[in-house]
Image (cartoon, rainbow, N blue to C red):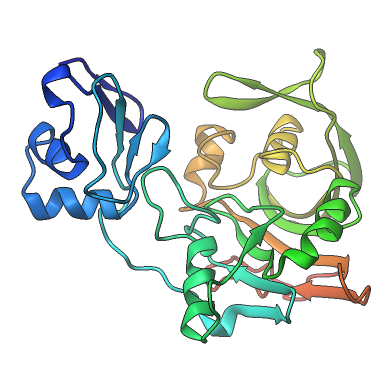
Length: 305
């Protein structure tokens, strides 16, 4: 038995004498679990065979196939459903939601249930929609809150996808950062690349072009509140660009350094506003996500546009 422990998963190869086993039985024996626990882990979407998630506990394994088990970050618990009060806009084509911090946008290898994408499908099904459709054209990091736009009809996909690709969707984020900028506004243009396990800024190397406009809203005691408008849409772009400027986001444990990471219990980044032309009706939409209850407010509660 060849077993390997990765950063977030455990993997092994099915042996010749295990050929023909059902996946639930294999998981039970190899992971020293009760039968019910093994079946729940499979049904939860945490077991992958040959690179694909397997939810059928009776799926037959073949010798040589690689099995990966991604341990659920909150355990095998189905705890998340949409809050109807957080729906910002909805019609026959679009569904816009004010995502909570701490909830993934889409399924994770270890948890295919507790995320906005799957919860939206369940919400629509409860309302009587047959075979609900949900499409994602952008996403928010798990710790980022705010405006998330989804399609609920394939008819909207092409136009909305083109709008994002052509940077015609204006997104404005709010972020608390460590440090006091000596400027009021700034456009950050620094390329972004990828190294093993993380994204990085590459100021002097070829990388994907990335541009973020930043405006200072409030200067406090060693911390500032800023608007950040990503002109491009690279992964972790705002977090990387602000950290590169010496203004890491409070609570950013990946890019912020120890001082910024310790300054807040979570990442203080909020997708505040989003403006776009409706992909079907062409009406202009301006959507605003209210601030989370734990969001620190400056002494002047008015946050300027």
